[in-house]
Amino acid sequence: MHDSFETGLPQNSANYTPLSPITFLKRTAFVHPHRTSVIHGKHRWPLGRNIHPILQIWLQP
Figure (cartoon, rainbow, N blue to C red):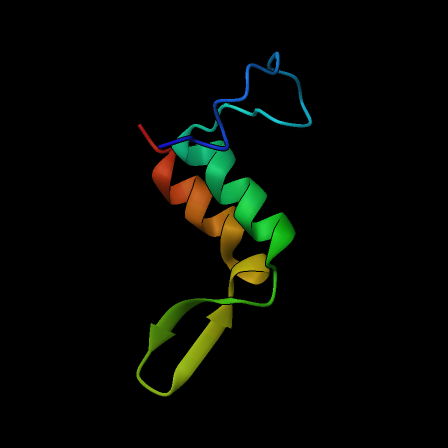
């Protein structure tokens, strides 16, 4: 079976970006800022509004 991602192209910013958990969250908030990130009872908050508090909690020592 041929994997379309294994075409022998050199890695560059257009076809390859390594993601850490933090860069993944930042990219997701940038690409999908209106998607729901937190649901608490009847309340829902979008990811774009919550990314900074989420990162602050995650990055605490």
